[in-house]
Image (cartoon, rainbow, N blue to C red; front, side, top):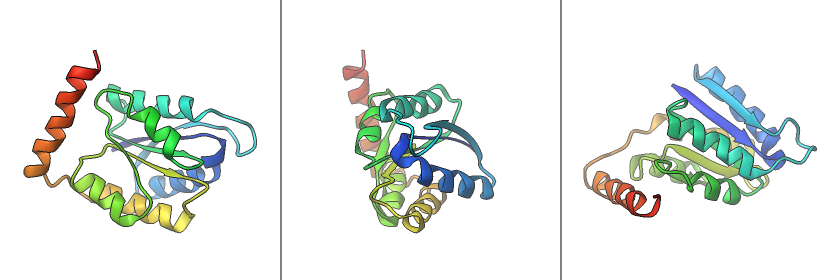
Length: 150
């Protein structure tokens, strides 16, 4: 599995912890975004990097981190085929995979501690999509993309 991870400056420190954790899990990481936690970097550019990597097939999934997770998740969801879920705990990370087949997880470096973030990463990458009735809804989302992303 290949994962694209990027952040703005507010998510830099947490991104480094998550990147290390992913690599320890044996996951190949494409790293992008801010080069430090002090030099300003746009969450828009970081979100574009992840969404382009995942939508093109260069990466299987993505991890998006900005100050709150809100802005970067909005950016990622502007791309066809991206289902980015803003998560705040292990339960939401598990459910976004199980029920929504999310391919990008987003969270905030200023609102989530590293222990919670790593637990969310574990849940996100361990959980499988349940399919069934949920597949119908994910299909409905894809149908909306066909209409709205011309």
